[in-house]
Image 1 (cartoon, protein in one colour):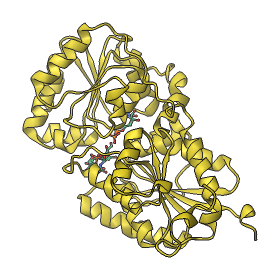
Image 2 (cartoon, rainbow, N blue to C red; image 1 turned 60 degrees about the vertical axis):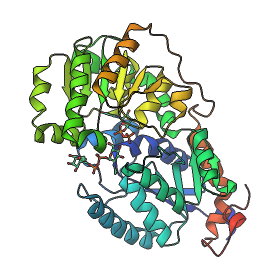
Image 3 (tube, rainbow, N blue to C red; image 1 turned 180 degrees about the vertical axis):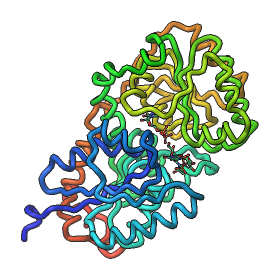
Length: 392
Ligand code: UD1
Ligand code: UDP
């Protein structure tokens, strides 16, 4: 049969909250194009209703074809179980391509399973580097990129990093940011979310906080300092703080949870769905976070963001966006928040020509041009370089 008529089978692997908003536009675009068939595999790394299922409903992601139900555990247990289960699934399906997004353990597990089975691998959000090897995600990013054949890049720094690391130019595709595709698609719809009313918050009259990086929340002294900073800022304006399950567990086990209840300005809520969170960010006066994705979303929305970390893998948000790295010292965080609140609210929305809502289309355009090569099932190390993509 001519390859024109054949369908390229893709297995798309997701597992944790930040994967879902990145996968949604890609899965939708792959389903729109003839010539591709995509199956969705969920590792089950995140499993609470509010960390997983809600996003599938809100973002129109199809029900996963398979949920491995791996759940929480030590990183090594989690990875070992995922690799084994994914290898079995990949072996059964023999896809033409495995696709992964981001930098979570599910991303790494799928990458290792694919490469060990000699299946082509595409990584979305390749090349980001914090240069902090103490961050589990940094190692996941480096290893996933190393295993990948098609590296789709969200911002220019990613291309610079990958070229410096010696990746062949023809495997790199600077396509823009698929998470921003999702944001732009849902921004209007999120305006009717009722979360501000439910929390008694007025537009630009509150801040939003999120914290979940192990370096910040697994250390009692550091978490107490960050909580202290948020308590002090909340005396000036209320802070809506959807608590990540990791952070809730640590606040409880370190005996810090009572401070949450005592502090009137802190509006502690469970993790919220995508639309509520987008509404919360879009109408906020200030965002305080250690999240990766929220640095990008706040920049696109033009809302000042203080990142409570020493480094970022997303330098575009510092150069062209509203993001500031303020570190983790409480004094520095409070004074940066005060400075931001005292300044007029007139920050521009980030302007990056590739963050335009069409990144997923560009990814699938590249895959389309590589489809003939995927269909002949090229083999890593045997069919070198150009054979991977006969056209581009
Ligand atoms: C993971 C990712 C991190 C990402 C974050 C997004 C890795 C190494 N880390 O961190 O990069 O920024 O997701 O949110 O992959 N838990 C629940 N319910 C859930 C999920 C987790 O209660 O649905 C609790 C469990 O106690 C678990 C803890 O949260 O042990 C941590 O979960 P895990 O997936 O290991 O890491 P995250 O901190 O969520
Ligand atoms: N998010 C959400 N609800 C929340 C907190 C975050 O929908 O209560 C969204 C946020 O808008 C972004 C993504 O989750 O799209 C970021 O995920 P997270 O911060 O968990 O992970 P990271 O980006 O740090 O890996």
